[in-house]
Length: 301
Image 1 (tube, helix red, strand yellow):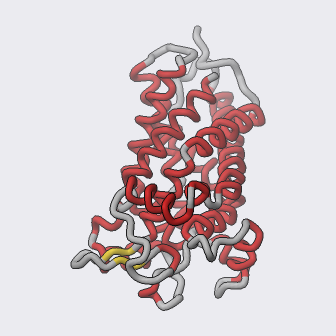
Image 2 (cartoon, helix red, strand yellow):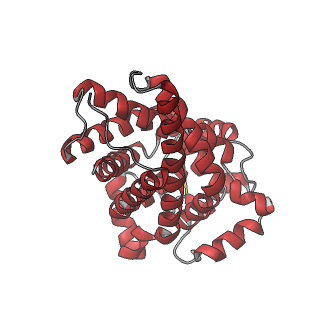
Image 3 (cartoon, one colour):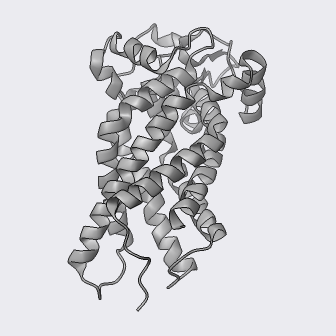
C-alpha cells in the first residue's frame, strides 16, 4: 500500500517550508514591492487624480501598471528601491512559514494517526480546517513584522527607515504597541488563503497524479501555481484591505488610521469603485504563482 511520502517531523516540515518560502520570496521580491504600492495608492474612479502611497501627497506616485511601477521605482530610487524592506520581509516570511508548516504538520500527523492507517486521505474540508488553524497560530506571532515591512515598502526613499526604527515609529503612533498588530483581524480571516492553497494543492494532487508518492519538480510547481492562483483570486479584496490597514493612511484621511478592514473596503469603493478592491491583482497573482510553485518544488524534494 503506497504511503503519500515518508513520515516527516514537525520540525522537518517547518524547516523545509520556511526555507523554500525564503528562497522563493527573495527571487520575486520586486513583485512584492510593486503589488504593495499598487494596492495602497488611491485613484478616483471619476478622474485621474491619485493619492500616493504612504500619505505622500496627491498624484506624485501614481503607477498605471506593473511595468510602469517597476520602471518608475528604478528611475526615482535606483535598483535598490525594488528591494526596500527586503530584510524585514524575509524575516517575516521565514517566521510565518516556519510556524505555519510546523503547526500544519503537527495537526495533519495527529489527524492521520487518529483516523487510522486504513482511512482515506483527508477530505478537502479537513485540509482547509487544518490549514486555517495552522495559519491563525502563525499570524498571531508574526504579524508585527508584516506591519513594519508594509510601512517600509510604501515609504518614500527620503522617509524610509530601518526595521527597528520603523517599528519604533509604529509604536509611537496613535495605536501604541498594539499598532504592531494592525490588520490582525484581516490576517486571521486571510488564513483561508493558505488553507485554500494547500487544500487545493492536496486535492489537485489526487486528481492529476493519483497514487503518486513523489512528484517531479515541474509537477509540484504546476500544482502549487494553480492552487495559489485560485486562493489569490478568492481573497484579493481582503489582501488589499489588510495592506491599507498596515500602511500609513492616504491624504484624504488627514492622518486618521483606518479602524477595520471593512472601513478600508468602504473607502476604496467610495473613491475607486468595486474594481479598486482588486488593484494589484496582476503582480499579486504572478508573485503567488512563482512563490507557491517554487515552495512546493522545494517541499516535495
